[in-house]
Amino acid sequence: MKVLVVGGGGREHALCWAIAASPLLTRLWCAPGNAGIAEVAECVAIGAEDIPALVGFARDQAVDLVVCGPEAPLTLGLADACAVAGIRCFGPSAAAAQLEGSKAFTREVADAAGAPGARWARFTDPVAARAYIRAQGAPIVVKADGLAAGKGVVVAATVAEAEAAIADIMESRIHGESGATVLVEECLVGQEVSFFALCDGATAIALGAAQDHKRVGDGDTGPNTGGMGAYSPPPIFTEALRDDVMARIVKPVLAEMSRRGAPFRGVLFAGLMITAHGPRLIEFNVRFGDPECQALMVRLRSDLLPALLAACDGELASFDLRWDPVHALVVVMAAQGYPGVYAKGSEIRGLERAAQIPGVQVFHAGTARREDGALVATGGRVLGVTGTGTTLAEAQAAAYAAVDAIDWPGGFCRRDIGWRAL
Image 1 (cartoon, rainbow, N blue to C red):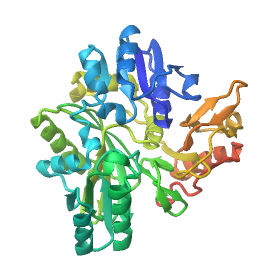
Image 2 (cartoon, one colour):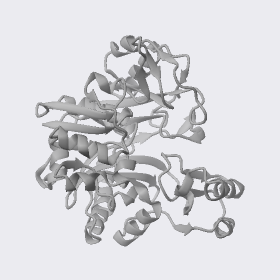
Image 3 (tube, one colour):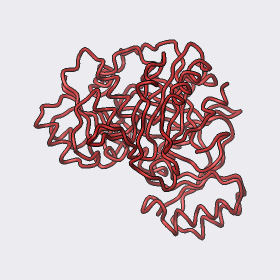
């Protein structure tokens, strides 16, 4: 089979790495890719949001399957355009991708499906939003309704902090038009879990779970990021919780999306809060998480490619996935200054030493090769250093041993990934 993966981050490197191991694969491209992806796939200089060019390339190369990594191409209609061209695409239609494209849409669907979540209210008027916040008190959560690259959520400890978030999102428009509408939600208390299910429009099967670390600093301090690390499986997420989430959240939402004429196909990522009263839905994403995907892929024993095809073809009902009984832990190495202003172009050395450590796989996110062959940082989140082990502590030790083998003065990482579970 010929496969085109869309995207250029750590998630896409992990997907390419897993797909490259399939005996079904004959040729693998990635658009636009990165320096690490170039080691397992042919990189194509097409932007992830250039839908006409992506579909044109897939058609010209007789691609059998397009696998979309990031959310933006899906909300822009990549799967729809592929369908018109007669090309399979792993990922939901634009209508179904609104589960991530609009947080208000997610809440409406979840409420209609009876899925447990937070109390919420939607606002297009900042004055009304502030009045509601003052009436509710803090802590409270403020969310930009649209896509904001994982940075559109503020968990406000005080009313003043929540009002400042309204000013930033709705008035200063730090997230652009994504902040024209905001949601103000009840602050759920517990541990967050990222849960993933493969869906074919009618059937959903559990894919796996992970816990990530959103804040930039040790001890979960500082601003939210796209993710500074993750581990899988999370000890808190038992089989009973998994079954509960499938029964009360994933399957009812899948049925509601079909009822609305927008059946969901692809991977449904449920952001959950495990509260004293059970799991509650925080939000949905319509793609693999990053860096959760890296932790899941190194644990997956089954061939990934047939699973993606089964989701596209409506054949998940009889499908089963096998997992390696290991723990995986990802440490994200980011450019100094991230998630604020950061420099690009700093050189990274020592990846060969890191890769020699048993149980380690280094996934690239924001990297490129200079003309002289040197590896340089080109993004905020740059590397996903992934360790595996028979225990979570072993996986953590392997990951940080690899981090310490990497010579990159322009980068930093959290030193406590996995702290809650350990």
